Each structure stands twice: as structure tokens, then as C-alpha cells.
Length: 291
Image (cartoon, one colour):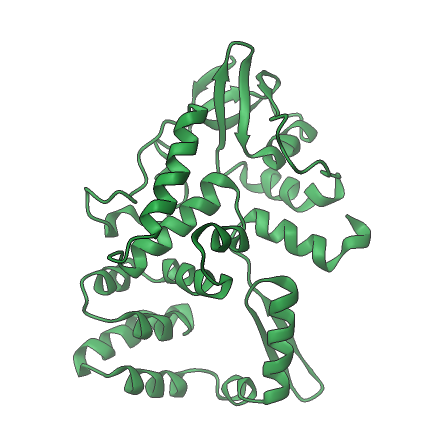
């Protein structure tokens, strides 16, 4: 059957619960993701976009995505528009190509008019120019641009005229528990405090948040308490000028957040990414000879 409702969920927001929590936004928020029906559309009925600027889609560059789809399926639906000749792809060519390699009969997709897609991007960017957005609304808008338009953080930053690091730091707020996100929206904590909390290990964030509220800590006090919780070795090393310089050099090269943890002659380099597309771009930068 060429077209049927998807079993993945009733709307786009249901597919990305770990990134965007619609319940923290007001019902009338312009940035709240709208419920959109996800359909299963036959792979052979979807034509690729002739305006797609990227032409290099080697099998090797799709390997990680293929392995992920094998294990979990396609978690983020494609965006298509309906034409007289069938469906034309708007967003999701890597997912479509991976599905073809895996010989999948159908893929999850949202059918949207091309004009609606353009209007949605314009609306998100226009909302980001407003001065009254709270940090969570700003993060949601960035994440929607990434999810619904296959943009990298760098591309989002260019569209809204901000530094990529600023966009990356705002996006990290989406990893906070719902309770903390709501507190930030309601003004119970400020952005600086939220940034400190998101930098803590995930299992310690709610306890630390409760302590902040109970003691009505200032930002300076919050930072001091967080330093006590953080792994002391890593904290001391983060202040090492040489390690800091290496981190900054890697961040400029890879265009994402990098953390170096060093212990003697050994250690770890942690490279962050926020979407499958960003992971693919990082792999291209790190292993160009194999892609």
C-alpha cells in the first residue's frame, strides 16, 4: 500500500520528545510545534529534489545512518510535497537514500506544501529576531530549524545572525528536565544558572536545581556549588591554558563544542553533535579519505 498512517506517532512533536518538550510552551506560542500527521509513503513514489545542492552521497557516508535505521528505524520523518507526478522530497535525502539501500518499501513522511515549508522557515527566523523570547523558546526555534530543514548549527547561526557557539549553548537547554525548563521560562532561575545546571552530569541536575531554589543562590554561588559537584580533575584541567587552546582550535575546525579530558599522558576528546546531519558532517571532516 502506497500511503498509510504511520505507527510512529500522531505528530512531529511526538517523534522528538528528548529535544523539544511542547508541554513547557504556552498553548498559543508561535514556536510550539504543530501536530502534523506522519504517513508511510512508498519509497518508489518519492522523487528527489532536483535543486538539492549536495551531490555526493557515497555509501560509506551513509553507513552510520543505515546501521541506525536497521536498529531503530527512521525516527525523524521526511518532508515531502505532492505534485502531479507524485511526491517530491523537500527534506531528508540521506534518509531516503538509506531506505533505498535497505530496500525498505515505505518511509515515514509529512506531506507539506512547498510554500508552507518556506513560510514555516521564515516564521521561525522572524520569531528569532524578537527580543521577548525566553531561552527555551529560542532553543525550540533553533531545534525546529535543524530538525525540519536539515540545517547544521552553523547554518542556523548564519540565518539568524548569531555566533554558532551562542546557538550551541542555547540548544543545550533542551537537554534539561521539563521541571527545570519550566522554571527558566517562569523566571525562577535565569539563563546563566540554567547553563551551569546543564553542564552537570544528567543524574545530578534535578537535585542541584532543588538546592538552588531552596537556598535562593546567586549565579556566583551556583557556579561555586557546581564546581564542587563537577569532577575535580576535569575542572582543574579545563583551566589549563594549553588544553583550553586545544579545545578552541578543535571547535574552530569542527564548528561544534569540544571537551578535552586529560589524565597524565592519556585522556579523551569529547565532540558534541546535535543531529544525524551534524554527525555526518563531522565524519566528513574527521575521515575525509573514507567518505
